Image (cartoon, rainbow, N blue to C red; front, side):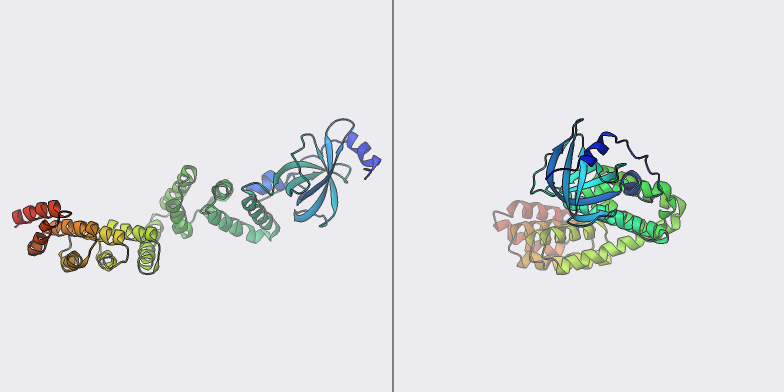
Length: 349
């Protein structure tokens, strides 16, 4: 295919378009969309070496994210440093129209084969959506995308939306209202990224400072929501990890609800959950749990659970349990702990 001589001559006379200063709400918009005329995905077809250096690639469009073009159309992109293309590989390009109006300069690109490309494309689509909707809806949609993105499973996504979130609150500090306190708290507790946790911590403190009563109210609501979620996990989940997390939550907050949940956990199918539940019942020092702990001591076969039950009965000063504990002196696996328990209970009055 012969590349039109007219386009080559135009390239030799190229300058750059003046930067467009548009008012975009998102950081992506200000940094990228203000410089782009077209964002597309497609395949490179042919590379042409230009007389004054650089290369030009004909590129078939497979998808359009931003700007005006046609799918299956071929466009020409000018490069000083050409990426390592292969004909079978799809790329996403961020393009700026050159003065000729018939060629583009690439200001950014990534391969669809990149590990993070699905997350990058999803973020791209969301950012373009934000900038395309009516002005009255932009900030709310942008806020929602930020809050969702900062708790994503993928690290690249969390970092991207953290940058967007910082941009949003720097220009619109009013988004830090009491109504989002609970959501920010959940993000803070669910992620491990230090930068993200530090940013959210600042946000939470700012909301509490501005509206302390609202912060307290939403904190209490969040606590009871966590309790309800933990109850559901303990009763319905098949995941050992989730059940252990639920028991740990109940163990950390002694109350009647936690007491009932821990007693229920004594009947769980996972011995690890039973052992942890009886451990916390001992720590809570509520004598009402003694009958249930005695039941588990008599019926449970797992040594780990029996040992924790004996420890819990000692913490609860359950002297009536001495005859039952004495039986475990005969078992070599429980002999030591049973002897220590007998001694401790004999000294208690």
